Image (tube, rainbow, N blue to C red; front, side):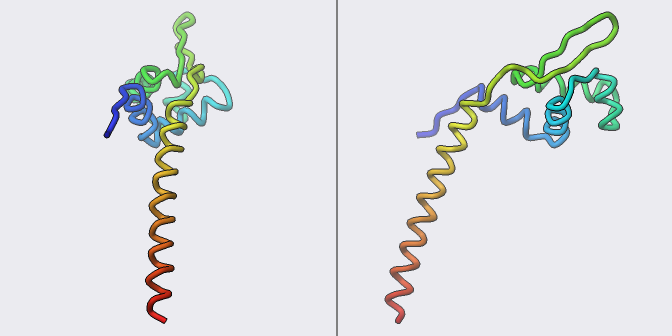
Length: 112
């Protein structure tokens, strides 16, 4: 049975875009203003703000406005649910490949 999780969907959608992944990597080293991120990624302020909003919705980025500057930093959200889903998916794939390997070993042995 397929189980859907709005939280997983939001997180995976947020990290699906290479620019958003780049923003996360950039913020992993230091916090930055929206203007600095726009310059770093060659984007307009409006474009970067849209990316930041999606990352904020996923809990991956936090912003704070101090005066006229909006600073961005990594959020405190851990990716435990996402890591568990990936691990479960990996186990399923490993099991399928193990069955394929067993099948090929059996059928290859019959050919001799």
